[in-house]
Image (cartoon, rainbow, N blue to C red):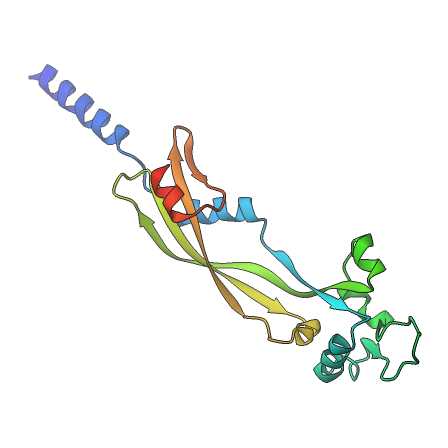
Length: 182
């Protein structure tokens, strides 16, 4: 009788230990944060030599806030930029590649993108694959007004997870067809 209870206990432990562990919200959040390094900076390139960008900046209200100066008239052959940034804009200016500086392009910070929440975890029937939908929240600053078509406050993302021998792993962005055949 004692042997039977030991055998049953051993069998139950083996069966429950071999079941694939489900991907929970806490683990998915940790893996997403590790992979994507949230919060991230959302940037926008301002073409300082372009009169169309200068007009957009002028209409955005950044001139009244003292962040930029917009040249409204320019003599023919003058190489001066239409948009110039003041000292007040310095916290929003980001490093710009040399190729862009030659073309009078300045990269500015328009928002911080932070992890929001997980909306849904869909486990595949095999139990070794999952599709996770989550949102990110963008906290805009004053330069968000410089974007002509606006900037969304929240974004939805979809990521793919695969369970390997050492646990769940976040896959690099692939198509859903590649994910299902993996």
